Length: 207
Image (cartoon, rainbow, N blue to C red):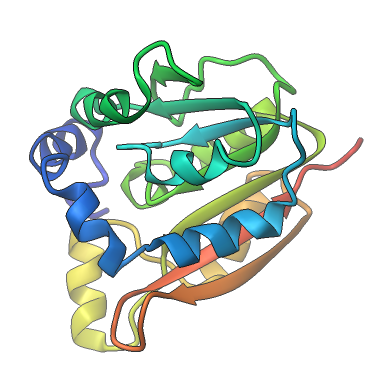
């Protein structure tokens, strides 16, 4: 387990990263990648969408263009403060402070559950994926974006020491263990030399 796969350390990390997050993020996860992922969901007006690990609201900004019914959740007060500056505390997005492994929402609540740039900090990713499936409606969709495992052995060792990086085989295992039966992966990249993102679109069973 990487040093940032610990909730207390991750909160401390984002206390400082929140100050520069929106300036650094486009080099790894930019608007074009975000919008490409959003298109995979075919969000309809009126769909209820939950953004888990919403951070400063970068993905939320794209989601709110598709539907007025968007919720954001993050465990970092400092990241949420930045999101409040964009949307307001009582603006169009309903924000909650909370834990991805214990989502404060009822079963079958959302048409779409989204999470980008968050899974890598989850100490128990399968548990959190189960939660994403639990709060999604039958027939709904779950989209998760995380860091693809590096090809270089040196970078692999560094990645493993910091946080969760995973390849498609590991994504298959996690999503299956979380109870998903239908899902697929897409590799996204800001530029040829930038880190790769692995984007998984999963469908929640109707049964």
